[in-house]
Structure formats: C-alpha cells, structure tokens
Length: 195
Ligand code: VGL
Image (cartoon, rainbow, N blue to C red; front, side, top):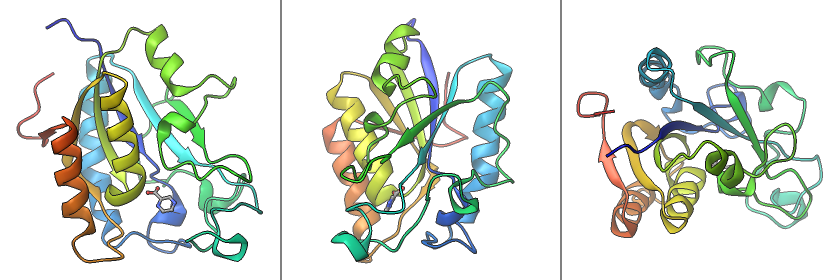
C-alpha cells in the first residue's frame, strides 16, 4: 500500500539485439511488450529508468582481457545506443553500468546517472520502494539487478513477458527466474500487473 513504484528497463541496447555484437536470442520479441509497460507507466506519470551497459574499450569484462564476452556496448558507439524501436520517454532516467576497466556492471545498482549518482540514491531520493523490472538478459543483468534490489529491501516484480536470456546453458533463464523468485521477487505480466 502506498508504495512508490518505478519501471526499470535493463540494457535494451543495439548490441544485445539483432545485428549487435552479443545478440540475446529472441531479444527483439520483448520490445513491443516493453513499449506497453512504458505506456502504462507514462500514462500514470510514474518514473521510468533505463539501464545501459557502458563499457570502455578495455575492460576485464571482455574475453580479450580475461572476461567472458566479446566486446559490446562500448561507450559512445552504435552498439551501446538504446534500440530505436523502444519508445523511451523524454524524461527517462538513464543509469550507466560497467563504466570502468575493472567493473563487470551486471547489476544496475553498480550504475550511476548522468551526474554520477548511484541508482540506489536515485531511488531513495524519490522514495521509491517497489520496482517493476524487465529487459536483457534474464540470466545476467536482469538477475543481478533483481536480486540486489530485493537485498536492498525493495519490493520487486519481475516482468516475465518482457525478459529474455542468453542461455549459455539451455536452462540458465529458468534457473535465474527460480533464483529470483526464491530470493523474494514476484512475477507479473502485462495482463496481471496492477499498479
Ligand atoms: C549482459 C552479458 C554480458 C546483460 C551484459 O546485459 O545481461 N550479459 N554483459
């Protein structure tokens, strides 16, 4: 009751979608659903936050430097831009994560806004206590952000029709969802969401 809520969209960037450097299989399918959530929140004048991976060219996150991944979402490149089909509002709050050589930046809570303010402070300042979270990828950044949000004490609804996983192992996404639920996340879809 009386929770202040916000929508968080995780990493809907060109590199994670068709034509990008690290495309999430079927990732494009969630864009229209995310646009529905954006309309819902926008119509109610509720805050919308978009996180983005925002890596330097050299980072321990990339395979070449000891990490897991091909280079992606490099600062100020096309691949790091939000997908053009996503209808982000003009007052979108952008959170950039993984911005230094030694940061993986899986969780949005490792990220900061344009003034350098950490996500947790952005949320606290607005007295937000309940987060609705969707985006990419279920088994990495979505999972890390949801679990950290729950640990910080936020009520969290995972938007199961607006997430997609990388699935290095075929069951990774399901395992991630199970883990988020076991940590305390609730599940919603566009048909069941109540704001
Ligand atoms: C992500 C793999 C590598 C994500 C980021 O956004 O989930 N996945 N970097």
